[in-house]
Image 1 (cartoon, rainbow, N blue to C red):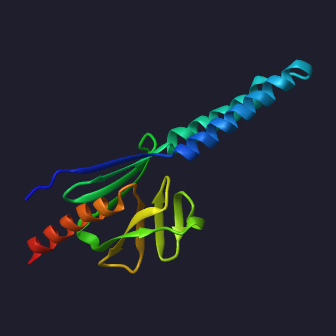
Image 2 (cartoon, rainbow, N blue to C red; image 1 turned 90 degrees about the horizontal axis):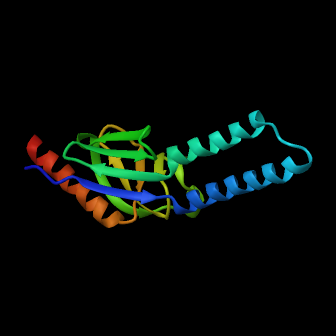
Image 3 (cartoon, rainbow, N blue to C red; image 1 turned 90 degrees about the vertical axis):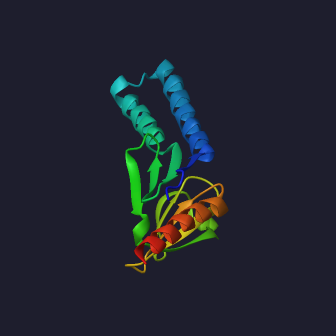
Length: 158
């Protein structure tokens, strides 16, 4: 039995807002300094490029659940994590602690991938005591989709 793919896209609105703010502050600093003491191109161009690359790498998070894998990718897709369904033992919706923050983080017992909000699913593995938390705007639905695939995989094995 094949399941339809589950796909969720989240945009890091706070992150994008912060980066736009940082870019505007940088631009204002450059423009105000250029009147009395011009800043050379080679001084401000790297800052602008670094801000742009960071935005491209982390402006959104996509979670794709197929019959065989969970794929979490950030931004344009260069940063991604793949988790094989057949390695999973459990999945449960959770609420992250506020101080876990956002992004890709090491948390107690594992890793967290989150771009906004506090809600996530926590998966445990058959072959490890580690956990992975995947941020989601609809953690109940994401947990259900993953659980269906875990159950299906277990039925196929028996």
